Image 1 (cartoon, rainbow, N blue to C red):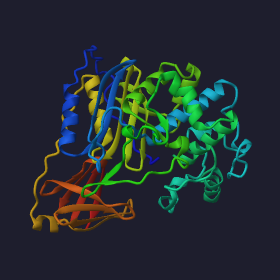
Image 2: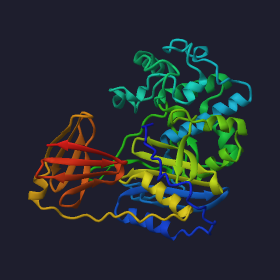
Image 3: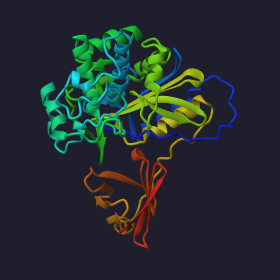
Image 4: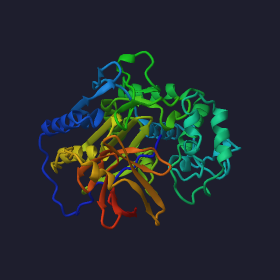
Amino acid sequence: MKRTTILLFLFGSLSIPTLQAQEFDPSRMDSLMSTMDKNNNWMGSIALSKGDKLLYKKAIGYANLADKKAATTDTRYGIGSISKTFTATLVLKTVELGKLQLNQTLSAFFKDIPNAEKISIRQLLNHSSGVHSITNDKDYLTWNTKPQTEGELVARMIKGGSEFEPGSKHEYSNSNYILLTYILEKVWKKNYPDLLDQYICRPLKLEQTTFGAPQNATKDRSESYKFLHEWAVEPHTDSSIPLGAGAIWSTSVDLVKFFNGLFSLKLINSSSLEEMKKIDSGYGMGLFQMPFYERQGFGHSGGIDGYSSLAAHFDADNYNVALISNGNNFNNNEILKFSLGELYKKPFPLPDFSMVQLTNEEIESMIGAYKSEQPPIQINITKDGNKILGQVVGQPAFQLLPKDKDTLVQPQFGVKIIFDRKENRMTLHQNGHTLILKK
């Protein structure tokens, strides 16, 4: 349900020659997974396919740390907002069958939502509705583990008011897909799990994909974790809240089957798929663009509780990639980039997790509050024993790892901080952006 950033991977010149297809070699993928496993940076599974052919699958880490239950490729994880791709597919299928129209307004189903008479199904799908996202509420984490009714969630959306005039801009809102879940159930007079099973899981034989955590297959169920000093279990968001915006559980193997089935028109027709792929201000219908050099991919990311995920389809060579994690202290975009590099024979170096030991004096010289005027950001650098922590004011703390006496990194968020002690400042590098903060 968290909005996970999808990086635009390495835009390259269109003059780069197309490489000849070669047999996929899994050895470097094994090395990547082994490196992350040995350094305790990532737990989860990954799968790569070419059409219907599975090229690679691997799981590392634990499904349950308390029980020391190792993860397998059958372990199921919360996929978070990749659920939106499933929900958008169901909506487009419903439109194909004449039971719903993209220009139909929300007022036919929820007349009390602000601007309901102006908001279309299309605008819900591509996040241009202006409906308030209830997951942004300040008290969200005080009630997200408790069951919620339709009336309670809709009341929160109404209370939040309209964020902007429908169609005037795009802004990610989980409420859009919560409402689409309710609309599907009202139109079909069936519950969402049954629709998911009937129109997606059974046609594609997705036997390990469920709405909510698997109830009768606990051996395949995972817990999720957040890393600070060590892995700590995260509580589960109740499935009645994210619904079709983020409550689906699956495996990486099932996800590559789903994306292959969607793009090979096994679920919806070509016109519907083209609607999903229409990008407006960066947003499609349950899809985002994912360029890799001259190739164009479509996919989605996800994050809920301690789970994070990425999945994508690339028409060039019909590749599908999916990764799901239940414990993440490394950047998923880097894993996806490495995987695509292996598929397209554009290799990237293995991640370097080597660290140095700083002296107490070197650590103390970094401690302090660092501020930027534009944008107005404050990052506090503190220590806990021999661990260095960073915290953006108003957000949770995270551990920073020393690469040398002047440089700290946070692999999960792609953060690198370089300290200039003489000038009492630090330079923050993240996702191609640079920001100077003064102590």
